[in-house]
Length: 124
Image (cartoon, rainbow, N blue to C red; front, side, top):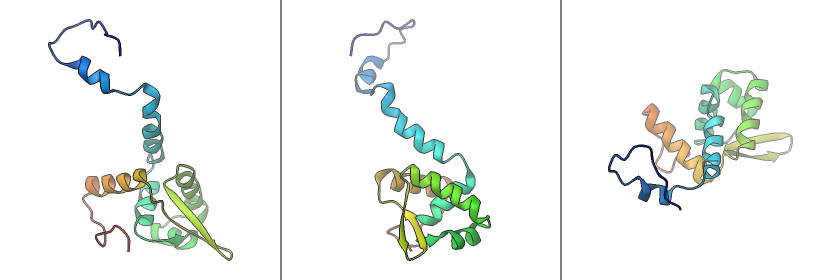
């Protein structure tokens, strides 16, 4: 990376930090994950699915929301890669995806809300 002439020299080592900073586009994936978490109901649904696999009707009952509202949140979470689904006959079951992003987000939610997984591996 080329040297950047800063308006103020505070004597720090910002040049060394900047050598390791990725281009701006590299942060887009992180911003996209945080955009998915802009709704408390979606966070609750995601956290629930980190611990169990459920259908829309049961998720609706567990989070006290209508099925269409839950379906909307599930679609966004699935499009963002945070959950996956499987079909058994006419029923579709949802659970958190097994990705680094989903695991880190799950951990972050539990740390910030000060809750713990029902068991050590994070799933019921």
